[in-house]
Length: 410
Image 1 (cartoon, rainbow, N blue to C red):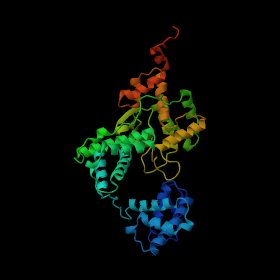
Image 2 (cartoon, helix red, strand yellow):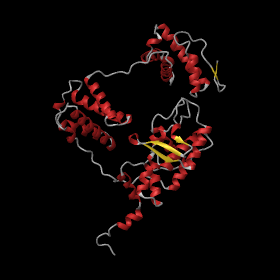
Image 3 (cartoon, rainbow, N blue to C red):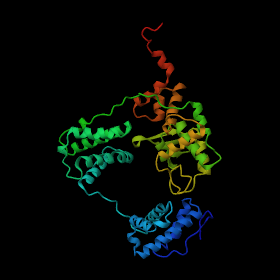
Image 4 (tube, rainbow, N blue to C red):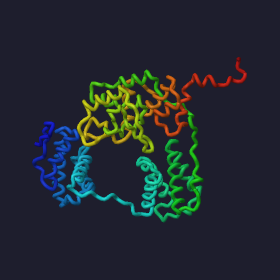
């Protein structure tokens, strides 16, 4: 039994033998710090005791332990494998690496000509273009698909490329994807072709031959909720529970400050400046902005931080309710919080993502007399024309400039 600082007794498997016997007690303490219940830790340690015996039976030293051994163990152990067992073994291997018990494996390097070129393109986007990791995650698989389709693993002869090859690739992708994804394909491919020409690998300016995906700016009204429905959405959170207080703080950041989902997910404790009453926002293009912290938002954050946020290693503000205790892995978690709140409130708008509250804030501010410049500053738009879409919701102002219908009665 292992006594944690909070008094929780964590059961360890005293019958464990083999390579992992001396590490499971520390792993149990680590799991306790991640918020796992004692019964769950016992189940995990029982599995890992079997894994330890399997390693000894197969004469696998810790110095060479890798994920491949975990897969082999679970395959041979298949008659008793439970849901989550694969995750448990991966957790242990990561714990051993982080604590220096087994060596950190060097990252796999694609030494093929295609792999080296994609790596160079990624470095170019990161260092010379200053693009974010998330952008690279979107661009590089598209480029790899293009190279695979054009050359099929053979030598890369870019001078053999023709505009028709570019068009066929884009048309095939555009037919099978939404318009937003098709635009991403076009942007990634155009950037890659410019990179090839800059590096002297392509003599022809094929980037100019990349067609654009049809689209019209401001063709739709921004999807927004009326102010009273936003308040109904906020009121749907059960603020008597840890999950309710956390979700209420998340929704207030979206509704009062117009933050993007990714900005809320990425927020850390260091971004909260309580003395100045401000919040630091990590926006698009790695831009930082300081915004005033409204009283109700600050109060919701204080309630969550004091009552519910667990003590853990991560500096992220918002932490998972269930173990493992860590920050949100992606902005999609914020969208899920919005969708659940909409369902609780009985609201069924066409668009249900985190951006719904950003649009709702801008629309409400415009109707209350704020200028487009002021709205753009709050939403941190880098280009003024990005805010112009909200002019379409000011029906009264648009009616005043509308021309009379020809032939209509005066």
